[in-house]
Amino acid sequence: MAAPPPRSRHLLGIALTLVAFAGVAAPAVAAPAFRAVIRPISPAERADMTPSVWRPGCPVPLSALRHVSLPFVDFSGRVRRGALVVHNDAARDVVTVFRRLYAARFPIRRMSPIQRYDGDDFASIEADNTSAFNCRPATGSRRWSQHAYGRAIDVNPIENPYIHADGTTSHRRSERYLRRSPHRPGMATEGRALVRAFDAVGWSWGGRWSGVVDLQHFSARGG
View (cartoon, helix red, strand yellow):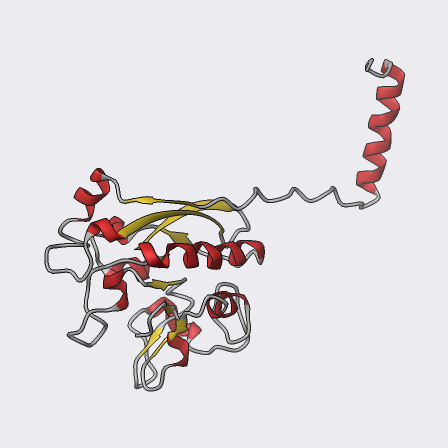
């Protein structure tokens, strides 16, 4: 098709300018399609995870774990890509959950395997990092956490704090989120996008515990 003559192009430019000044919004740019990739842990990742995140004696072998690459929407509305390490039998549930969250544009601060923080759960929380596998005991216990099986995920841990029985949290930036109303971006709230997404695949939520409450914590097997 031939290009319009110069005068037509000039008139078209004027028309577009007038539309802009009239306050007509430009069409929204569609977000990229959701695409997740599930793959085994690579040799380099195995080396990086040992011994800070995984070591002999952990309840699952590295061969049972999967690296799941996922797109997510950050707190600025930008689409980014992150990764979670989970058990092979939890990987498809995880993809289903984060597909729902992506469609809902639920904001996530960041999402990196916890070896980025040398397996230090406190440091990962301070970074407001969403993470999954970490071979460690449950908080305040000697038994294995569900994170040690790759069947638990902590989402936006600053906005969704672990609350001790006395009603306090160990992270200063989380203190304002001890008050759960009104709902703010990134929060896990009963009946809203984050909790509904995990409910849909049958995972349990630590926000429903009695005594201590772990608002960031979702697990396939409870605990």
